[in-house]
Length: 130
Image 1 (cartoon, rainbow, N blue to C red):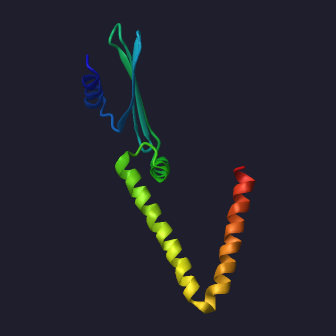
Image 2 (cartoon, rainbow, N blue to C red):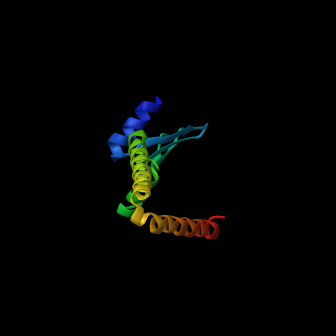
Image 3 (cartoon, rainbow, N blue to C red):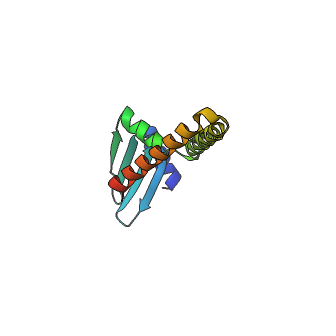
């Protein structure tokens, strides 16, 4: 049976969702994995008998939000959304720095807040990451 037919059969029969993440074939077994945000499904097919087991896992709203935040198992479209959002946030941050430069009354406190915030973030990084 071709790969596409196996995947279609599993999707139709068990209402599996998510993108096809892995399709492995060896002498005794075929393993098919589907992944999506907060979701995974695995099917293990015995090639000799045609019998198979399907394991489906849906982890809830928090796992979905976590996967969307990280861009894990989301596809190219969602990763583009993340990249555009990151670009907009960088633009907003730099425009804030430019505005801070032109507002003389708030320049010194703003630069001091920038320095303190940068030092705190660096200290947290050194403490927790490295």
